[in-house]
Image (tube, rainbow, N blue to C red; front, side):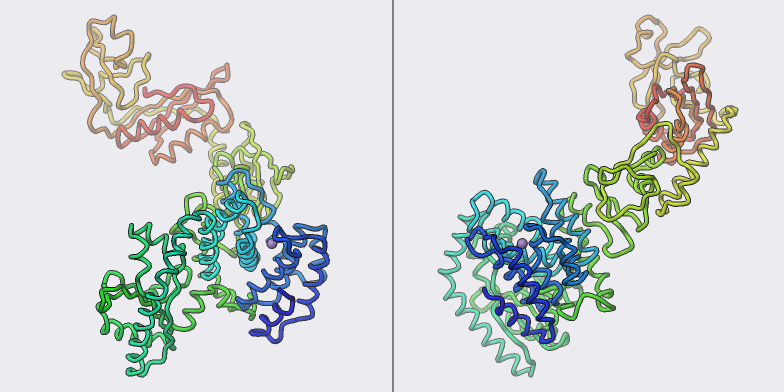
Length: 628
Ligand code: MN
């Protein structure tokens, strides 16, 4: 391919492009890649040149085309961004930088890699969506020239194309790129099936084309009669989509492939519906196969009417009806919307709301990708990461404290330092997109009132205020008197024994649901033990005791722990999570640094009592939790 081929392509839609600058970009890249060759043996410059042409075919602006020419310059050579920015402008520099970042990702494990790529794409595109578009074109050209690599590389790259890039292309609405990526990846991943398809298609082509021509001529006649102008074409079938349909519908190749696919492009929305009426009169429609994506566009903005009918020879006729504009969006998505007119201004802003939806991977993405993708693009947010790679979205201007609270309130309460991208920073440090944040904690540490001056997220503010309140509660440190239980209800029932005479034995930490038995004392009181308790073996006065079926009342829970700052706060927070109500808390500290706390809590059921005990037992430094 020659440079002039690119220029010709651009001139088709943008006579006013800055061809001098594009040429300069080309020369710059050519020089930078001077001594490099591709695996195919071609001059390296052929790669950026072809990538630029793919983008020109999408009628995109000159900035992304120049960036395409330069996209491997930094990656593969010594040339820096600065020079690119100075010579070609800030935007071009930004796009090149974004693409390079994605390219520099190294696969740790296949799973990590996938999530990482998607994340980097997100971050990069939050600044400029053109980064993704350029990366897709780059990938597409690499897929077109994959045959020159060895088998292992082919498979790996094809898998990436299938799993990462094709879905992204779909989300952005770049359908033509999606199909090509999929078909080419399919070829390398399932070579036998692919070859079978190719043979099958070749064998049936003539018959199929004949049928399509027949249907088209009937349609043309009918539309003319009704004075509707429309363009009717046979629809190409993509190998991979045939394959997917075969798998999904459990049908064989012939059944899927034999259908007649037709596309009708009208001049107006009204005509779409008129045409629908006409075709439904010509053939017998299958009602459950009808979809109105004009009234209900897909999340990638796709609009069309889909209908399937049974023809005279019992063949399936699938028809898509849409306007020219809808068609362009279906084929080119974002590119059709913005094109060379640029990506900025009102027009751009208006598109952002649907872009957000596009990039919301709810439907088909797996969990890790969903997490990565469930971020609001372009809003005043930044995306940061935990050392494990989990994405944390924060308001712009956020600090490590905001980050810590976003991860977990416990982490926030205890944070006393941070490392960002492995460098130590202060807690006031402003985080940036893509930062990997590691929070350092200390058990002794508690939230400081000062933090309220610099945190940005409302979550952090709320949590800090709450922690300070709780801390003040501890500072007073006066043991609160326990009021006598006003509901004298027992958790247990034993025949002939009054509730107030049943108690849990000191030796046993019983939990709701545990198998229990009672020992009746001479005074008629009953101590409840676990059935496994040794004291039952020694006693002759064992009686049956059962948990009540329904329980609603007040219970004392005693918590023994190694005392530390924030312990009470942790316990009270845990109680708050279970939405139970603490009536009283008695806090005492023994001389040896042990805390002996008793909480009087309202419960609605034995289940919630059990749940709370389990949760409190998990709190750090808690040694024993029992019902009293
Ligand atoms: Mn490249």
